[in-house]
Image (spheres, helix red, strand yellow):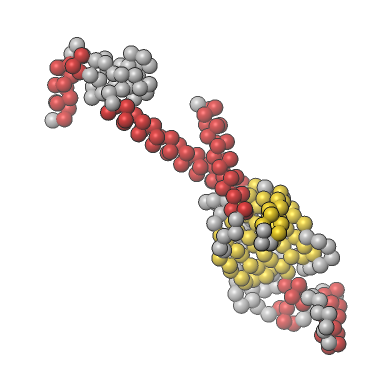
Amino acid sequence: MLLRLAALLCLGFSVALVVAWLPAMFVTPAREAIGASQASQPRWDVEVQTCFARTVVVFEHKYLNWLQAPPADAIVCDLDSWVMQRRAFERNDPPSAYYKPAHQLIESPYWSRAFSVPTKGDRDIQFIDTAQGWPFRCVAGYWAQSTSRRGKYVSQWVLEIPISQYGVVPVGLPFRPIWFGIAANTLFNVLWICLVFAGVRACRSCIRRRRGLCHVCSYPVGGSLRCTVCGASLSPRDANLDTHPAGDLVRCAIVAEKV
Protein backbone atom coordinates (compact mmCIF):
# COMPACT_ATOMS: atom_id res chain seq x y z
CA MET A 1 0.00 0.00 0.00
CA LEU A 2 2.74 2.47 0.95
CA LEU A 3 4.73 1.52 -2.14
CA ARG A 4 1.71 2.15 -4.34
CA LEU A 5 1.09 5.51 -2.69
CA ALA A 6 4.74 6.52 -3.17
CA ALA A 7 4.55 5.53 -6.84
CA LEU A 8 1.40 7.63 -7.29
CA LEU A 9 3.02 10.65 -5.65
CA CYS A 10 6.13 10.32 -7.84
CA LEU A 11 3.96 10.04 -10.93
CA GLY A 12 1.90 13.07 -9.91
CA PHE A 13 5.05 15.10 -9.26
CA SER A 14 6.53 14.12 -12.64
CA VAL A 15 3.34 15.13 -14.44
CA ALA A 16 3.39 18.48 -12.61
CA LEU A 17 6.93 19.19 -13.86
CA VAL A 18 6.12 18.15 -17.43
CA VAL A 19 3.05 20.38 -17.50
CA ALA A 20 5.11 23.24 -16.03
CA TRP A 21 7.98 23.02 -18.52
CA LEU A 22 6.16 22.26 -21.76
CA PRO A 23 4.63 25.77 -22.21
CA ALA A 24 8.15 27.25 -22.25
CA MET A 25 8.75 25.55 -25.60
CA PHE A 26 5.86 27.31 -27.35
CA VAL A 27 4.79 30.89 -27.96
CA THR A 28 1.25 31.35 -26.69
CA PRO A 29 -0.95 34.47 -26.49
CA ALA A 30 -0.60 36.27 -23.18
CA ARG A 31 -2.72 38.74 -21.25
CA GLU A 32 -0.76 41.80 -20.12
CA ALA A 33 -1.32 44.09 -17.16
CA ILE A 34 0.86 47.16 -16.61
CA GLY A 35 1.00 49.37 -13.54
CA ALA A 36 2.84 50.08 -10.30
CA SER A 37 3.24 47.84 -7.28
CA GLN A 38 1.94 50.55 -4.92
CA ALA A 39 0.87 54.18 -4.98
CA SER A 40 3.78 55.78 -3.13
CA GLN A 41 7.55 55.44 -3.46
CA PRO A 42 9.53 53.28 -3.28
CA ARG A 43 7.64 51.10 -5.75
CA TRP A 44 8.11 48.87 -8.74
CA ASP A 45 6.96 49.52 -12.29
CA VAL A 46 5.39 46.14 -13.06
CA GLU A 47 4.21 44.33 -16.16
CA VAL A 48 2.53 40.93 -15.65
CA GLN A 49 2.14 38.60 -18.65
CA THR A 50 -0.13 35.60 -18.10
CA CYS A 51 -0.74 32.67 -20.43
CA PHE A 52 -1.54 28.98 -20.00
CA ALA A 53 0.62 27.47 -17.22
CA ARG A 54 3.02 30.42 -17.27
CA THR A 55 3.29 33.86 -15.66
CA VAL A 56 6.06 36.36 -16.40
CA VAL A 57 6.60 39.46 -14.24
CA VAL A 58 8.82 42.22 -15.65
CA PHE A 59 9.59 44.96 -13.13
CA GLU A 60 12.09 47.68 -12.36
CA HIS A 61 12.63 50.45 -9.85
CA LYS A 62 11.18 53.82 -10.81
CA TYR A 63 14.71 55.26 -10.83
CA LEU A 64 15.39 53.65 -14.19
CA ASN A 65 12.94 56.01 -15.87
CA TRP A 66 15.24 58.91 -14.96
CA LEU A 67 18.51 57.22 -15.93
CA GLN A 68 17.95 56.33 -19.57
CA ALA A 69 21.06 57.36 -21.47
CA PRO A 70 20.41 59.95 -24.21
CA PRO A 71 20.75 58.89 -27.85
CA ALA A 72 23.97 59.50 -29.74
CA ASP A 73 22.49 62.46 -31.65
CA ALA A 74 21.07 64.16 -28.53
CA ILE A 75 21.39 67.93 -28.31
CA VAL A 76 23.32 69.69 -25.56
CA CYS A 77 20.29 70.41 -23.38
CA ASP A 78 19.36 66.73 -23.35
CA LEU A 79 22.89 65.82 -22.29
CA ASP A 80 22.83 68.42 -19.54
CA SER A 81 19.48 67.11 -18.32
CA TRP A 82 20.82 63.56 -18.24
CA VAL A 83 23.90 64.65 -16.29
CA MET A 84 21.70 66.45 -13.75
CA GLN A 85 19.51 63.39 -13.33
CA ARG A 86 22.56 61.22 -12.87
CA ARG A 87 23.93 63.49 -10.17
CA ALA A 88 20.53 63.52 -8.45
CA PHE A 89 20.55 59.76 -8.56
CA GLU A 90 23.97 59.65 -6.92
CA ARG A 91 22.75 62.05 -4.19
CA ASN A 92 19.59 59.94 -3.78
CA ASP A 93 17.58 63.03 -4.72
CA PRO A 94 15.41 62.23 -7.76
CA PRO A 95 13.17 64.79 -9.52
CA SER A 96 9.89 65.81 -7.96
CA ALA A 97 7.92 63.86 -10.59
CA TYR A 98 9.42 60.73 -9.09
CA TYR A 99 7.15 61.13 -6.05
CA LYS A 100 3.89 61.53 -7.95
CA PRO A 101 1.32 58.86 -7.03
CA ALA A 102 0.86 55.99 -9.45
CA HIS A 103 -2.20 56.12 -11.72
CA GLN A 104 -2.76 52.38 -11.99
CA LEU A 105 -1.88 49.77 -9.38
CA ILE A 106 -1.33 46.12 -10.16
CA GLU A 107 -1.20 43.14 -7.84
CA SER A 108 2.10 41.29 -8.08
CA PRO A 109 2.22 37.49 -7.56
CA TYR A 110 3.33 36.41 -4.11
CA TRP A 111 6.24 34.35 -5.52
CA SER A 112 7.75 37.36 -7.33
CA ARG A 113 10.20 39.83 -5.85
CA ALA A 114 7.89 42.56 -7.13
CA PHE A 115 5.61 41.58 -4.25
CA SER A 116 8.12 43.17 -1.86
CA VAL A 117 9.32 46.79 -1.54
CA PRO A 118 12.39 47.76 -3.62
CA THR A 119 15.60 48.80 -1.93
CA LYS A 120 18.29 51.27 -2.99
CA GLY A 121 20.36 48.43 -4.40
CA ASP A 122 17.55 47.58 -6.83
CA ARG A 123 17.30 50.98 -8.48
CA ASP A 124 19.51 50.23 -11.51
CA ILE A 125 18.39 46.61 -12.11
CA GLN A 126 15.63 45.18 -14.27
CA PHE A 127 14.12 41.89 -13.11
CA ILE A 128 12.13 39.23 -14.95
CA ASP A 129 10.50 36.59 -12.75
CA THR A 130 8.96 33.53 -14.39
CA ALA A 131 6.73 30.92 -12.75
CA GLN A 132 5.20 27.92 -14.47
CA GLY A 133 2.77 25.16 -13.62
CA TRP A 134 -0.91 24.27 -13.82
CA PRO A 135 -3.37 24.62 -12.16
CA PHE A 136 -1.01 26.39 -9.72
CA ARG A 137 2.44 27.83 -10.40
CA CYS A 138 4.91 25.37 -8.90
CA VAL A 139 8.43 26.30 -10.16
CA ALA A 140 10.01 29.72 -10.55
CA GLY A 141 13.13 31.28 -12.03
CA TYR A 142 14.60 34.76 -12.28
CA TRP A 143 16.55 36.95 -14.67
CA ALA A 144 18.27 40.19 -13.68
CA GLN A 145 20.24 42.80 -15.61
CA SER A 146 21.83 45.97 -14.26
CA THR A 147 23.13 49.01 -16.14
CA SER A 148 26.72 47.95 -15.45
CA ARG A 149 26.72 44.23 -16.36
CA ARG A 150 25.02 41.65 -18.52
CA GLY A 151 21.91 39.84 -17.48
CA LYS A 152 22.06 36.47 -15.79
CA TYR A 153 19.65 33.62 -15.20
CA VAL A 154 19.01 32.45 -11.65
CA SER A 155 17.32 29.14 -10.73
CA GLN A 156 16.80 28.26 -14.38
CA TRP A 157 18.21 25.81 -16.90
CA VAL A 158 18.73 27.63 -20.18
CA LEU A 159 18.05 25.76 -23.42
CA GLU A 160 18.80 27.19 -26.85
CA ILE A 161 15.91 26.33 -29.17
CA PRO A 162 16.70 26.76 -32.89
CA ILE A 163 13.93 28.61 -34.71
CA SER A 164 14.44 29.22 -38.41
CA GLN A 165 12.84 32.65 -38.44
CA TYR A 166 14.59 34.06 -35.37
CA GLY A 167 17.72 31.91 -35.15
CA VAL A 168 18.49 30.51 -31.71
CA VAL A 169 16.16 31.53 -28.88
CA PRO A 170 17.20 30.93 -25.24
CA VAL A 171 14.48 29.28 -23.19
CA GLY A 172 14.67 29.12 -19.41
CA LEU A 173 13.28 26.16 -17.48
CA PRO A 174 12.78 27.32 -13.87
CA PHE A 175 13.44 24.85 -11.09
CA ARG A 176 13.14 26.86 -7.86
CA PRO A 177 10.20 25.19 -6.05
CA ILE A 178 7.05 27.00 -5.02
CA TRP A 179 6.07 24.56 -2.29
CA PHE A 180 2.37 25.27 -2.16
CA GLY A 181 2.07 24.91 -5.93
CA ILE A 182 4.09 21.67 -5.99
CA ALA A 183 1.98 20.09 -3.24
CA ALA A 184 -1.33 21.21 -4.77
CA ASN A 185 -0.43 20.15 -8.33
CA THR A 186 0.91 16.77 -7.18
CA LEU A 187 -2.28 15.99 -5.23
CA PHE A 188 -4.41 17.19 -8.15
CA ASN A 189 -2.55 14.90 -10.56
CA VAL A 190 -2.78 11.94 -8.15
CA LEU A 191 -6.55 12.52 -7.90
CA TRP A 192 -7.24 12.48 -11.63
CA ILE A 193 -4.83 9.55 -12.19
CA CYS A 194 -6.74 7.54 -9.56
CA LEU A 195 -10.05 8.50 -11.18
CA VAL A 196 -8.78 7.34 -14.58
CA PHE A 197 -7.59 4.00 -13.19
CA ALA A 198 -10.87 3.53 -11.28
CA GLY A 199 -12.89 4.28 -14.42
CA VAL A 200 -10.87 1.84 -16.52
CA ARG A 201 -11.23 -0.86 -13.85
CA ALA A 202 -15.00 -0.32 -13.60
CA CYS A 203 -15.44 -0.55 -17.38
CA ARG A 204 -13.32 -3.69 -17.52
CA SER A 205 -15.32 -5.36 -14.73
CA CYS A 206 -18.60 -4.46 -16.41
CA ILE A 207 -17.47 -5.97 -19.71
CA ARG A 208 -16.31 -9.18 -18.01
CA ARG A 209 -19.60 -9.57 -16.15
CA ARG A 210 -21.57 -9.22 -19.38
CA ARG A 211 -19.44 -11.94 -20.94
CA GLY A 212 -20.00 -14.29 -17.99
CA LEU A 213 -16.43 -13.98 -16.70
CA CYS A 214 -14.97 -13.28 -13.28
CA HIS A 215 -14.64 -9.54 -12.88
CA VAL A 216 -11.16 -9.94 -11.30
CA CYS A 217 -9.31 -12.62 -13.28
CA SER A 218 -11.66 -13.02 -16.31
CA TYR A 219 -12.05 -16.78 -15.72
CA PRO A 220 -15.39 -18.23 -16.88
CA VAL A 221 -17.90 -18.19 -14.02
CA GLY A 222 -19.55 -21.48 -13.05
CA GLY A 223 -22.29 -22.18 -10.58
CA SER A 224 -20.28 -21.18 -7.50
CA LEU A 225 -20.62 -17.82 -5.80
CA ARG A 226 -16.84 -17.65 -5.52
CA CYS A 227 -14.34 -17.75 -8.39
CA THR A 228 -12.58 -21.11 -8.47
CA VAL A 229 -9.31 -19.54 -9.70
CA CYS A 230 -8.73 -16.29 -7.78
CA GLY A 231 -11.28 -16.76 -4.98
CA ALA A 232 -13.09 -13.48 -5.68
CA SER A 233 -16.62 -13.23 -4.32
CA LEU A 234 -19.28 -13.18 -7.02
CA SER A 235 -22.77 -11.84 -6.72
CA PRO A 236 -25.71 -14.14 -7.51
CA ARG A 237 -26.32 -12.10 -10.65
CA ASP A 238 -22.81 -12.95 -11.92
CA ALA A 239 -22.94 -16.68 -11.15
CA ASN A 240 -24.49 -19.25 -13.50
CA LEU A 241 -27.46 -20.27 -11.36
CA ASP A 242 -28.44 -23.06 -13.71
CA THR A 243 -25.48 -25.10 -12.43
CA HIS A 244 -25.74 -23.90 -8.80
CA PRO A 245 -26.98 -26.55 -6.31
CA ALA A 246 -29.35 -24.05 -4.69
CA GLY A 247 -30.08 -22.05 -7.79
CA ASP A 248 -33.83 -21.86 -7.21
CA LEU A 249 -33.40 -20.59 -3.67
CA VAL A 250 -30.98 -17.92 -4.83
CA ARG A 251 -33.41 -16.82 -7.53
CA CYS A 252 -36.17 -16.50 -4.95
CA ALA A 253 -33.90 -14.39 -2.74
CA ILE A 254 -33.14 -12.08 -5.65
CA VAL A 255 -36.85 -11.66 -6.46
CA ALA A 256 -37.68 -10.96 -2.80
CA GLU A 257 -34.90 -8.39 -2.65
CA LYS A 258 -36.33 -6.54 -5.64
CA VAL A 259 -39.81 -6.56 -4.12
